[in-house]
Image 1 (cartoon, rainbow, N blue to C red):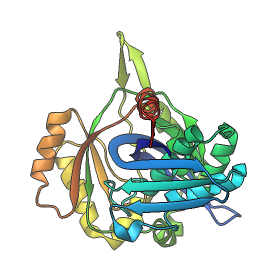
Image 2 (image 1 turned 135 degrees about the horizontal axis):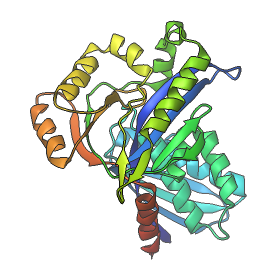
Image 3 (image 1 turned 180 degrees about the horizontal axis):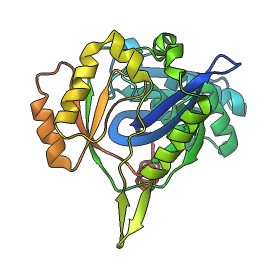
Length: 313
């Protein structure tokens, strides 16, 4: 059975603004996604069959089974293409669950990319994007990687120029937060400012954060976009606000909540500073990861490497 072993990289949101509820009951967002080196490991096997079947096992037993987003991704793609295949997925989880790091969405995106490679003939790329968008707002981003702008409910993805790799410390407290619950807690007073002002502020900061080419090297100007989820999440979980403050005191610029939380990340000047911060925060409950950002070119190179190593049982 042809199979590939790939990695599903996590993401952070370098900024996230909620503009309001849309007529379809989703929320209109402006966000900047960034892939990081923290990753799950996924093995995908696929072979033709008279009837489609998708089976998923996981290193965390409670995440195994047909309800996992990665399994649903495989089923949706087979249904959309009309292919019949037997698909087996094994998932080794490392990205914390319910932390805002996009682990489930990344797993789904990785399965879609792996099956795009394994199926013959290969599915249309536009179809792959439609399936990804139907699975969840963050899933399309993981077909692209690097740094990207997310519009709409987050599913409209536009690549941004990648700056140099940056070192981060990610802290994932043992406080799983449901994205749906975070939206429910998001209150109207977050939009006291006019929608136009929030959009203008977002765009001006995105532009100020774009890397420049100066003196033969990329230089990245500072510009923190903020995260609108912080207000409601910190109200419910004050300990997270304290972790952000500790990151800032240790030199993180910026320090932000990851998506809807509960993980937080801080950007540091170099790996040594990130490791030093991890030692200083060793008393915090949960998991700490020293990671680096993954540029789009590197993301694509990794995928070429993984797919080139396809094996046949």
